[in-house]
Length: 298
Image 1 (cartoon, rainbow, N blue to C red):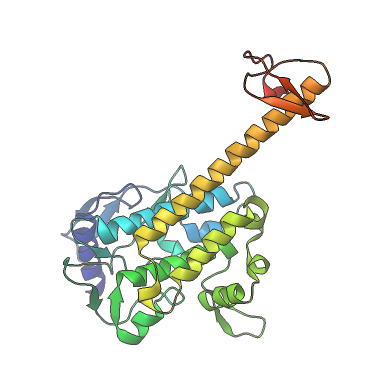
Image 2 (cartoon, rainbow, N blue to C red; image 1 turned 90 degrees about the vertical axis):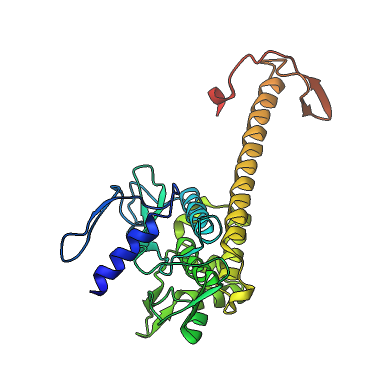
């Protein structure tokens, strides 16, 4: 009976949602004892599998992690503030984030979700959710708010950064919370000791720190001090844009360096107008017409 109620609730919730990063329901059958739901086919499984069972042939790169985080944050922002009525997901975790054939994130499993009237800020309900992702404030008060989803997202963000499971056994056989471990490491300035190897390999220091600080704010024990999902989405997009801008600057610098090297050795005496190469303090003016593509020299 509980299963049937959960599935009916999911049908009701998903019928209100239209977002590219939320799994689509295609149909249902209510004539069976347990309702049957038909979803769009999501080819590549869950984010949990990619974080914790990494495939060397297709590593979960920093660019992929940041993009997935942005997509999930955007979906939650939509649920909280742009849907016809606010929706609290109530079970955000990496195993409820699916990846399609292009590794686009799709938030799934709305069985425990609740649609809220605009004038309400929380729902009082029995405590349920997944251990490790559960908002401590909700656990203590039984009041679930939009900031409870923010906390769960913060745990997921910590997973993406560290590659650690939300709850794991330590060498002393004690259960360890990733959220508590992550916050302690941040306080002790040990972030780079706990990061996933792929994150360290691909990511730049500034953007990693920026994402980690955002995760820390999402994990604040006081819900009122956590950012909204809209703020989270905007900040993550800003970090992504700064990464792209940095990559473009680096590419431009590499191209100019190659052009300068060519000019210095006398193979080509001109390139594009408005740029100059400095050689022993002497600037050489550059021409309009590019004579060779820089990729031939990289």
